[in-house]
Image (cartoon, rainbow, N blue to C red; front, top):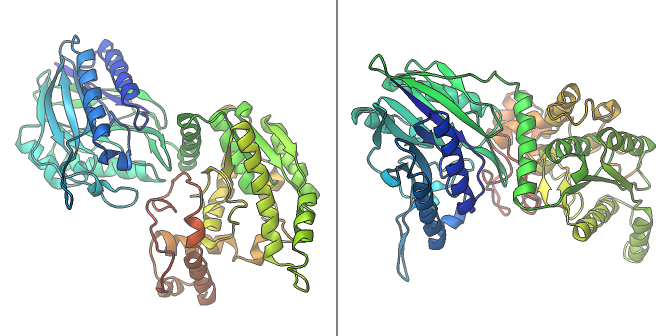
Length: 554
């Protein structure tokens, strides 16, 4: 006898409870027709993840309750089908002076029109982008239910990273662990998940099915890649990454002990995962928020080139517009390369000179600046003129502006408030400059979405980076070489190493202290930056919460 398990790896929209419920219903019906009798949907699938402070609104939780009932009613006629649906449950006990939290991150087992079991997540993560203790109370107890003779123990995401929940499920009679998840992507996270779940399966001597979310939600991306491991921790099945999928796993119980089998999607390159994460982040942010398209300033440099390539892969050429805005300091090769790249990808391309506006600003300020040399003030005026033009086009035509700043620039403040930081979505905000270069090279070698091979002109990749805001300017006039800068930033910003540790690792003290100072004094800029896609284990978003005002210097 064999139980067919379907992990419904689906892309949900936060707050669209009717739409999410219908997506679960449709997937469950298709899976049932394919022989599945257990369907696992991801964590908090009924409302989408993460709903943040929407969880605090009683009407939101009530709408989730209604959507769960809708799913149960719609699937009532499918005999023997069990569907696990993730949803919030409960509310707050309120008075004028105190609020007692009674909300749970839960999952219910729905079968033939009824809710058979409800399990509440025991381990609530509160690190990186997670903030679940703000919204939920830890659950208690276990959930083990039987489908086609197999005892299934239900866990929710973080539960499976700890020993106790799985052990309790085992003691209650579970033979297979079903883990539903909404685990945000960062580079390397997929392998870490498989490794930890393999450890958990070995520790309890049970096979494990891992059902995962897929899709983009504001700054986070969920990469799918649902999988199954046997009782020895060996990978026996894996769904494709970065796409919706009804991933089927067979639990053969003929020997008295369930044995899992499935298909295994091939392993992927790290850069392929990174590219797909960025593409999905753009596609879902634009699509779920209803923007008709995007526009960006195309400078002839590497950052805007990479953003353009990502945008076209995400949205198609017809929804992407590139605008070149040359200043008196723009080199001829910049607009030549910008024209070349726009032509390669087939996007609409326009050129709007900012020279007249720049001269007008300088004339207006001539009296105030009399006798003072030109400096970053005049550089920033150019960047802000470009920001005004892009935002004007955005307002007039409805397309959202994609900013093109990278993580190295965000860290050190090598960016202009209300200038190149002006826009609605920061695509490469979490990519260090060295990663920008390597990913551009990868995209030139690969055409994963069929939008055009070798889209980035080689000279854009090989020429020294420059903001082109003064004569003969290059980035290294103001910053250390990017190889050095990024290595220091990884240690200081991502790994929390102190200045003395970094110096001890062989870096020049003066350079380290300069970089640390730049990170510290530019927090006020980052607070005003647009939201962007998180692809590292620590980005400048939810998992970076530093004060603007402070005196700590180590």
